[in-house]
Length: 116
Length: 112
Image 1: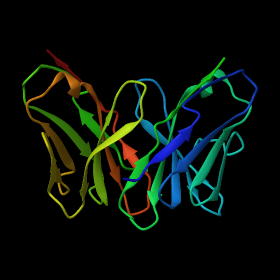
Image 2: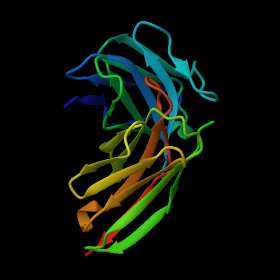
Image 3: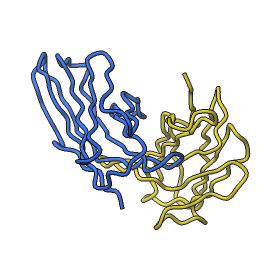
Image 4: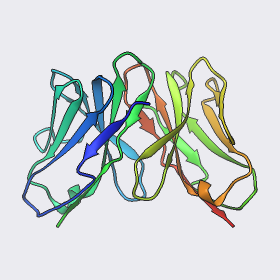
C-alpha cells in the first residue's frame, strides 16, 4: 500500500530556532499534501494545503511567515517552523493524496515537536 | 463550516462486548467519510473509508455505516479486545481533493 514517511519523528529545539519537518510519499506521486497539527487531547486541525509547484494555501489563523511550506517535488513537502516558541510544541502530521487515486489520503506517522 | 462531532468522548468496556461509536456532521454534502485509529503518541491508522454513494463498509470485526441525509456515521466494533484500546477519529472530506475535517475522537478502553 501507499506509504508516507515523516522525518524526524521527534525533535527538541530551543526557543527562537527553526526546525524543518519532511513529508515524503515513498511509493507514489502526490500532487497534494496536507499539514495538520494536533495539540494534546485535541483533534487534528488543518494548517495548510501544499500543491506541488505552487504556493501553499494556509488556513485562517495560521501564519504563513512562521510555518513555511515547500512542495518542491511530487514526493516531498517540507514544513519549516521558524523562530519556534514553546506554544508551537505539538504533533505535526502530514497526509498525501495519490495522483492516480482521487479518493484516498495517506497519513505520515507524525512528528513530535517540543520547543524549550 | 463543517462541524464533526463524536460521541461519546470516552468509553470503557469489558473485553468481549460489542460497541458503537457515533459520529455526526453538520453538512451532508460530503465526498467521503473515514474512520481512523490513533494510539497514544502515534500517527493515524485508516480503518474504513466510506464513499458518499456507499452505505457501509466492513473490515473484520469493524463495520462502519453512513447515513448522509441525516449526517451520521457509526463504527461498530464486535467482540472488543484489549488491543482495540485507542482513540478513534471520524473525518469527513467535503469534496475530492479537499483536506479532512476531523472530530475530536472517542477514547476507547477495553479492559481484560
